[in-house]
Length: 476
Image (cartoon, rainbow, N blue to C red; front, side, top):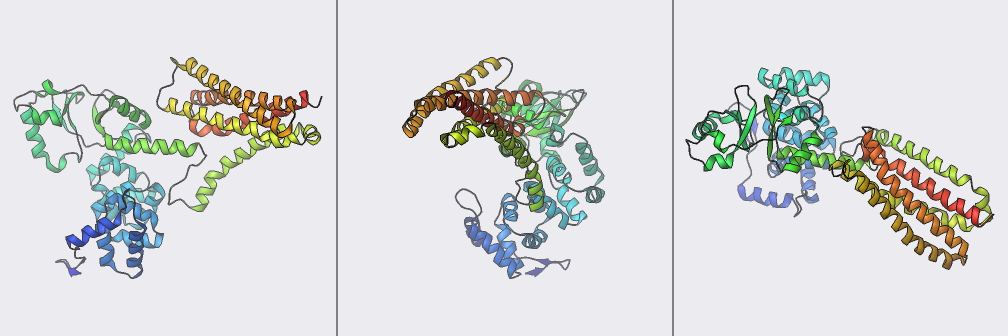
């Protein structure tokens, strides 16, 4: 360890060959952190070996450092955070989950946090600032330059999960009368003012409205005297208020790498690049996957109380629907008491209906999310799914009838089990396709609001159809 000219302590960098060894050790073949490497970090922290901790951190990409933070306890994280420079801290913060990010930002002084956020792209900076409480947000913004503060405050004025929040305000634009040579000269002279990542130069009219985009690849291959208007391509403009899920759909549909973001009137205010969209697609798919199970707080930094609270209400709704299904069974207590076989077979039709309904529901939710399901093919999709449910019901009715007959040697019971299977699988298909359509029409997320209701339908129909048919055909 050496002392710098200003008197502060500086950790000597590790030799290149040692760093390469640490990089190889840090990650497994699937780019996940090796447990052995995490143990090395814990051991160095326990020994108070700051030099070793810095060596281990130097071997990691900022995304891997963020991953490492998730594997460590709060005590160890407190030791690692001060070792991060402002630039590195900013990159790590942009990779962290919300709860973990908030914890780490609480440890950092507002001035240092302002410096770290100032090194970030504007879209990442806004995302990080948004996670701060009002008091610390004000302190951090006050410590930033006037330009950076104004930029962030403008972005924060847009709706959450909108294109305005997602975009980066740094954008490369050129007037429509420029040539390729002028554009290249501008790029070379702009230096740090350029966006960190860009794929197009947007050609704008005098009102700063994009009229096209000149891809960098075409720019580099064109003659210097060529007007930009000759090599530019049409651009897909993204309104600043558009929902990020809609933006992701447009990028996927039109295979976009970047797109200009415009405010009302068409004025260019920023750009969205494909790296932002990858994060949105992952975030939205995770939200839908978790919502299907009623889970809304799965981050590694979530507290026990927070997770318990978020899951409680979903489980409470499930309890209510389970009581409703049980009330259907209670209507046939006398029948079950007279014929014990009903208690054995009763759960089968309901269980099969639940599984079949979930298959249909998953297909419907996916089709709605990808806009593959609309008024043009609505009736054809409903017909297909209900027909599949009916055919599966018939086929499994044969199987269920045969199993019931071999089990209880009662042909009437076999018929009851078979008919109940047809009825419930058909009802499951109808509910599985219509419930998400209805919820989507009401403006709610079909992934989050349909599973519990689907289960209620299949349980109630399954119990009622089987016990009702048995009561009618066998006991009366």
